[in-house]
Amino acid sequence: MDSTDGVADLHMHTVASDGTCSVAERSQQARERGLDAIAITDHDSVSTEIEDRRTVDNGLERIAGVEVRADVQDTKVELLGYFVAPDDERLADVLEEVREYRRGRNRKIIERLHETTSLDRSYEVVRGEADGILGRPHIANVLIEEGIVDSIGAAFDEHLANDGTAFVPMERVPAADVIDAIQGAGGVVSLAHPGRIRAENIDGIVDELVEAGLDAIEVQYPYDAAPTTGYADVSVEDAAALAEEHGLIQTGGSDCHGPDSGKFRIGEVRVSDAQLDELREHADRRRSL
Ligand code: AMP
Ligand code: FE
Ligand code: ZN
Image (cartoon, rainbow, N blue to C red; front, side, top):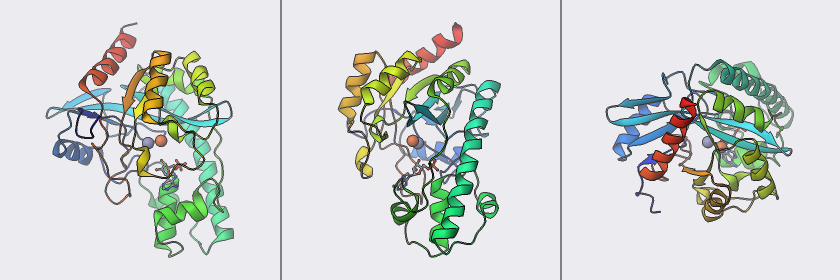
């Protein structure tokens, strides 16, 4: 599909996590780029700017989403939830559990950076300066501000990526629990960017997730925008084949993080009207059960 075909971008971040702009700014950008619908998928949190599972704002459909880190077969995966009820208590509890793991990990990353670089800002200060869920991109910006590195890419390459000096793995909630919580909140669950998973056995991972109730898989994704070392070799076509094989709905999106993030690409990856309809209908069916 050409990047200007399609009507909806179903993967993006805001200041609720490691994106650089608000939901309102996202809506404006979406309109400028001619989109009919967007999903807001912040890490481990549903933005407090979102009031309902689906809102229509001046003709633009806004889907309440989330991107949650989870574990399957000792591997980190991310699960996207769509059309979730933002006030669902069980989902809120699971997200809080994931964020607790995140806080522990961030504190350790900062401690390691104190040992391996000239950084002297405390975890509390770094935490206090960030708007949303603290992630490695925020820490990368701190390293730039301190003159320790000169770009986000260098911050990851030298310190924050899996083989960086300050990398700390994050504990993870079992994927089955995340799937249950998203579905309990009326949401549809999609496996995010299968070509960004560090595992050999993607088929086995997808099998287990399908067994746990996975509804969809992210097929359209900008894999070309960043290097792919260490990741499973899953292309857009391979992901479409996995969808076909397992009867999964196909989702897709740009994973835009906003202006000045190095990933300002809202609308550059889109899904069709038919894909959006299928997702919406699946969510409606789940709610009517
Ligand atoms: P975290 O949630 O703290 O583990 O950070 C994950 C986020 O870091 C991802 O969503 C990406 O936006 C970003 N990220 C991961 N690896 C890199 C990299 N090599 N270069 C730039 N950004 C990255
Ligand atoms: Fe992701
Ligand atoms: Zn994302």
